[in-house]
Length: 262
Image (cartoon, rainbow, N blue to C red; front, side, top):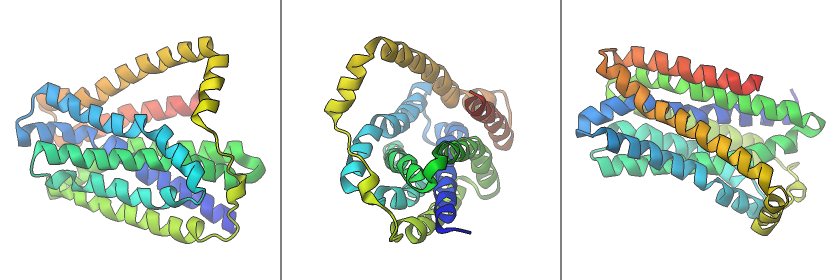
């Protein structure tokens, strides 16, 4: 097996590990609501905190990744994600719970730009195939997150979230050996793009951009509303934690399949 294939496999598997955390949180929300006596509004704020930390900061980390050039963010963020996610079950207060979500969200945001760029680096002429495998691994991880979370919590209690920590540690170790220490990595192949370049490109096609932006906003509004409140609804209907995790995973799996087919 070539060094490039090993590196590509490590990046894809790390994407699987990182995106597990995205689905991991959802079925635990009813348990956090019960533990801290949260209203539905406060539960929704937790989801907003995670998504803001993850989604809105990705351009910043992409910019930093272009400047750093070495895949440092890619290598160490899987452990950061697993740290923030794994500690959720032992959070002593709502504020600390929110802090752990910020850590996990920032880790996810920092991973994705360098992850996609590194796939392009190692895949060579098969970039489309490499990126499709990378995306599929993330989608599968996101779909597996709820089931993994509820299995751990059903067996070990809320503290069972700590069992997610080794996933990130192993992913970081693998990336350190296969990517960060790879002498063949070519930082010169990373072409920096400034925010002005991005704004100019958006300005040239602002009509199409605004239409696409509106579609994404509506999709995200619907998707993350279900992300936050589907598990709460199922718990109120008397379903067990494990049943809630299974149904939520099935829902996310449908989204993953749709994304791959689209």
